Length: 239
Image (cartoon, rainbow, N blue to C red):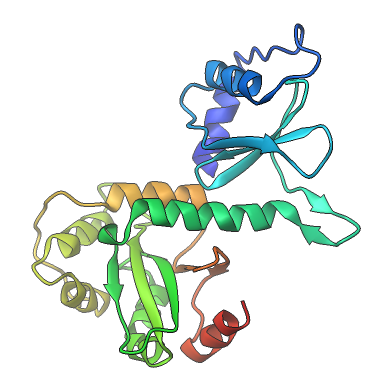
């Protein structure tokens, strides 16, 4: 999310929407204008929003709004005052689910219960205290029927100790065992290979990760921070 905001800020310096020539832009007009002004941003979809006069633009796991004359771009949440509902948050949840599906399970380290009831995706940092606490209780999550899909998000950034540990764990013969040992404080063998760490960090930034662990449910709801297994199972059951 922060990177998207930076891209938009930089792009707006040379922003040349077609407002002067178009009284009412359609989806194609807006796509062309956005692509011209912000070529680094990949637009996934453009459609009319619930609010009159606004188009909803999906960019990865983020949502922007553009006025229907192509003149204004807005960042923020659209609230239905009568229904007291955050419409943007609902759409963001769907965007997160799509983004995780697009990433694929082959880019994650997965712990599966015998009886599957729920599934969560967890952005994790090997050296984060609460990430370690969560993983130390992995058997409790599995006992609740929760599949845990780990995505690496080393908070210290690319090239850091935590980043290198994440790469080493991914490249181990048994990733699950290597992750468990690393979460206990053991330093994994320093090895490298093709890995998804950069991809999962990028996705975490799109999701607005501010700390780890960050839990994302099957419906795209976010739980920031550690949540005990039984409490999480209750929350998942009520979704």
